[in-house]
Image (cartoon, rainbow, N blue to C red; front, side):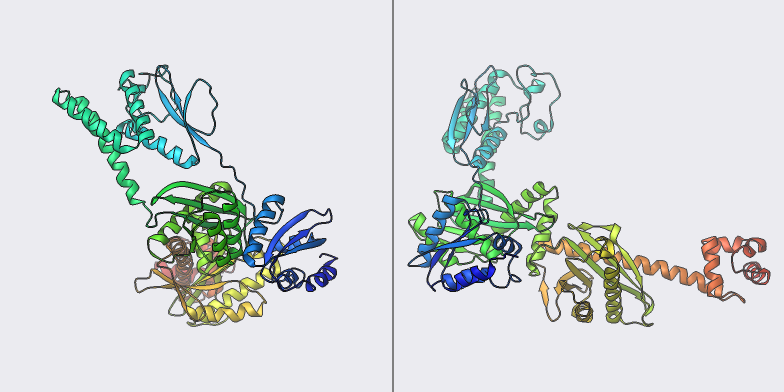
Length: 612
């Protein structure tokens, strides 16, 4: 803990209740954090009070504070403008800083015997021609790919003429996306003409090239060059198809940027990904992503991320669409409006087309983060969505789920399954036989199982694995009755583990998540729904399989205990030795007598039961 805390708190309490900017400094007098406040005294004194409500990052920052300075402002808006200027000037360690690695992009034209073009980040060849510069690398890459598909140009790494007519065509040829010069399916002259048309399409757009192609198609048709006319027709069809696809993904708002933050709060240094989709003239024209430290306070982090992003960008759209609450959104809107020179709004859509764009952006962020972390994008997105749906501080990396299985109150058992990073972690699966009572009581059974599991944690917590690890989330197969039965167990053990039930519909399919008194619908959260359904199906399968196994053993044991002189102990010993009832029935008296606990009389009785 910071030894200077009392001194710093005393200094903070003397600050005025006016807007301003504060600068936290370390022992080397370096600025490590810059913040703004509507009331300086209230905001700064919070840092040096109780540390229990602070995030890990804030606690770490406070531990390094040796002193602080402040600048008074006339308004909160003025404080925000000054804060942005100071952050840009000093790049403080504990502010959320987005690294701007965005440079210009170009389309490189390779003039040789066989012409070609590609998207590049810089001019690296003095002999080549370039189209550009362009601000959006995303747009350049997409345009090049689109043009090559339309005009059936190869997108592989083969070099021509060296590899002309030297191999079989790949899949792109058979699906109509390449003219296959590698297999000699097109001449050099036709290939170079296709490259020229593709470059014309890139520089002048689809309207002019469509008119030219239609004219050439009609001319070829009039000259009875039907094969040539068919090629022009295919190019016209491809351009129109691409244009139709663009209309499908067109945004309902003419100009906007869409922000989403997806996090993975596991590991020593948890990470998150900010994804930004940029729309202009209702079309997606750019996409960016940034890997950042996991933000524990999402509303505050969104404010910081938006501020940091537009500190690096000249163009501010009319609308900023975000995937959740933004701290101090009004003053942020005022600042964005001052940058844009027109009114800018911040929106948090809950449904409709705008919400679909948020989901698209979230999916992109999950995919980028999963690549960074070496996971699948689908599970990362599902965990993040489930965490948000249930109001968890972090996505639940380690989930335990429980289900009770019995037949009319007999052979009561429970199964515990574990999902780690969204996937079954069978190494940590466990089975329980209910011991506390006989008869049917699902609530008492669930309470007993959770109590025994947490008692095992106390014995094994030094191991950090299996029973020695606490889950980030507990999901019970059942409704609020099961949840209410288990809450007192968690309280008795002094643990605050998020606890929910999984509710099924009349067709035994997952319908909702149950709390202690209400239900949370899963219908609008596709990724979370799929994950919870998988958990529920797996825990049900596991518990039922154990119940069937126990039932089978009980049935066999009952068949043996019906024989005179054979009780539970001898029945279990026989089953353990011979494995099946069939093997016992085929055994001789001598073999039966060799089993521990059996004697000549009991062996003859068993033999007689199967042979007389």
